[in-house]
Image (cartoon, rainbow, N blue to C red):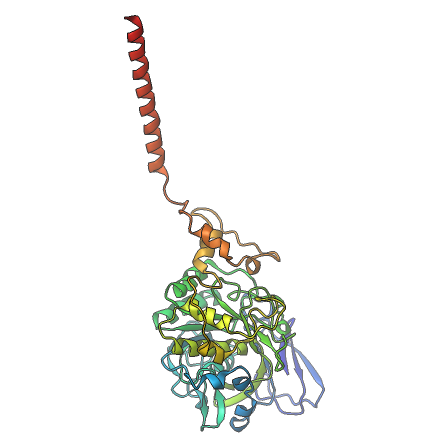
Length: 444
């Protein structure tokens, strides 16, 4: 197994030959032996500004004819049953990641557009970039993989959905990762994305102000945004942005038995639903496959399910789409929502078939409300608490809406001040006039 932890690359032997990925040649390990290598800080996403919360990958990639039978989640989470209703045709999912290899046999015809925001890739976003270049293709295959030769290869949750490949780099690029993401979100909205899938974490609960505008733009244009909770095994102990942002559907991970994963998921009160994050298999560039674990895989599985809902209910707004996902999840925690499991295990078939009452407000709040309540007034500094009760615990609550609906106190008050002064002067004039009249009457 390959994992990054505390600046160390640990490779546990399986008796098989790793295929690339280390950049320093191939390393054959006997079963059970452990090789520990020091790696450059640029390759370490843990504790950095921004990172991918997923990379726990098998050193021996699977083959196309071995893949389909290992996609246990297609049956266990009602995805195959949901295909009797829809396979996601006409819905567009933007994958903001390291780029999608659209030439992979499982993704032929799936990628309909894209762009590169790192300055390191191709104009269409289909050249994987960065040290984790395989990541974007893996993610994309679980969302909308088409399969390979009918019964082989990866089928995504929504095998007829369209993909946008928006490539970015976490360890380089001409602009910061934060700004790459902000630009990619706006591009996704402008290019008719119905869903944005983000298998990444900032590893902090707060986010830059540029994200207010970008994610607010997605919110204003009725786009469902989905983000990974992160993985404890990769150093993400608590959920970080963008998963902490109001209105974002956060995905946590469970084992094949449906139990919260200790290593391939982070937990926190911002969790929306849970999906498989262990024992996953996905496509990688140049036609390969790989076994892997992490909420980076759980997230596109849910993104594909959201695509099924949007295809089944094409006029339904984002708030009700998300509400339908939450309302039809299978509860497994002690409460609803639960700090560990959120609303429960996602259920694709129930999400597209169940009777769910419509809601007027987004069940996860809105970013616009949060900005109104928590960001600075003009000219003052931004205050975003960083302690254990910060953004993750400060997500907008129902009561916030009444506060947010109050008149905007930032409006110019000068007209009211002038009117008040004029009224006082008028009263004084009237009062003095009345007093003079009374004195004149008294002298008569």
